[in-house]
Image 1 (cartoon, helix red, strand yellow):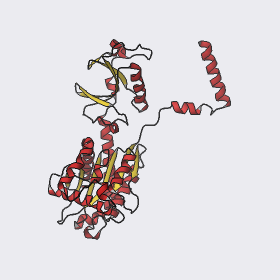
Image 2 (cartoon, one colour):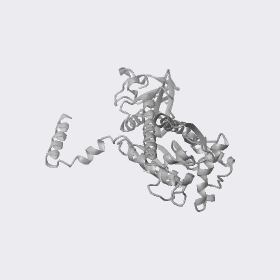
Image 3 (spheres, rainbow, N blue to C red):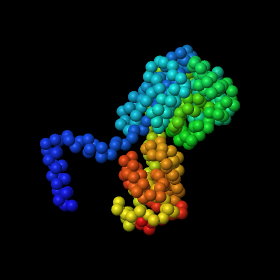
Image 4 (cartoon, rainbow, N blue to C red):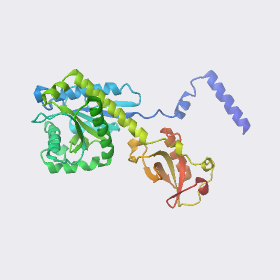
Length: 372
């Protein structure tokens, strides 16, 4: 055995000396991939043949695009965030295609930028997530944004007969996004908080309404009404370079807040590792009972976090269990210890370096050494 090891090391050194790049491909494959970027899709509302609202003669489509591009420019400076856009020029994009752009990118957050309008001098910035409108005003906001489907060809078939003017039609929109509602509200609240704290804007709070563009996006999604173009003072502010710059920097900061909040709520498990004697070597024997289930603990937090893959670096099959004051998060479930080890390796490649295997017998956690 020692002789084989010596020969292997000698040949490796020889290859490295004469062919310094010969082993690069092999070594590169063994190097853990860089941590995944947080993907944000910025959607500038309206565009092209759809001008959006024309309060005080302004163009909603132009203001929304300017703000979205400036948000992206700020976020693109961060290595941990990847930014995509539904449009970067003055062109019309179907509502369903805006959502599909985010879906194809497997985005972590979808933010749609708009400007509001009203017959009064209403003012203030608001954020919306998909849901049932609680009042006529919320329905009117959604109806205005949804009515752009009339610009699209074959919209009756594309949106399955959806009628923006029918309040009851909104009920069918909410089912798909219900899974992501909690995180959508957290993201919207982060934006709303920054509007008030940074810019002193009137707090119009986080509201729910039936927006088509949010319905078809399969991730936390927020629609931002940056203010009212129909308000003389606020319209002028939003149409100005200063106003657009301030709105963009505030929304960008809120997106970073939301991302940081996710990371804070999902803590590293290093502080909750089991005693050293429960650590098991790779050569441990296979369990002899099928009543044992192995899982990989990857994280712990004091707040309950949705067990969705976007919260756990793309890992699926996540379960959560409250133990004492902590919520613990587990990846995978198998009666095979070898399979659990493969799951552990995958979790570590994703960045959960302190992850470890735990055992459950008849649904109760037991010391790993007792079942191996």
